[in-house]
Image: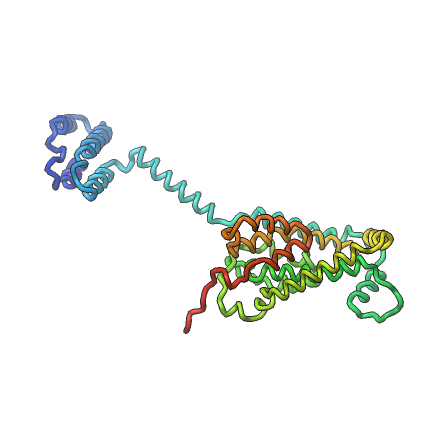
Length: 340
């Protein structure tokens, strides 16, 4: 009668404990007469009877007494009881589900890596490359490495070249600091630096390795390089105006200029790859605009920001306009450097 002794000790402080219940005495006598083969079944019924009687008695006691009764009853039950086994299994399943939720979903990273690998294969193997010497000449002209030889550069090509540089600046404003990764030691600035020469092809590896959320920003960072430059409204305004001017300049070009550019696109690997780069930059920009808005907690400041997030779908001008209108980073919660 180990179970009976345990229950008796746990409930000895209560005057109305069901140890004096006639049903209890009868059950105890019956329990002593039964063979030991059915001992576990009788003990289970005995514990259930005590639990139900104690629940009715506990109404007249304080909450502390009720907790003691319930705790004692649970301790008196057989640890091999199916109910307890199911509860343990439920706790185990909950623990497993919690671990899964905390784990990282690699599906997006794998898909981005596959995309980047496919793009690299296309750029170096499948992209048209009929005019490599002309590509080198165009590159030197755009980099101002060749003097004035009387050749007039295609207006659409020149606009695309300069706007790709502005795209890299836009991504620097979006990824620093809200696009940084707090769960990895991989910095974002090498990929941003690479993007000024390789565009989205240099940024995609960071997208694969990125692990949100961003780390907290210290007050000392806001006044130092490069955040003081990238968070400046002057920088954002000049970038937006320059991009708008380049788009208008290309849009006002004649039909012959556009036909010439299309011919370049079909023959030149340099122009073909750069055009695809512009499409990739435009495709990924809305996500990073949304990420920046979330990090700055802009969705708590009014519904007028929803149209602003939709404007980011417009290539270049949408993200550039958002950067002009977004609140300064200093108005968002940041961590202060503790004095040493």
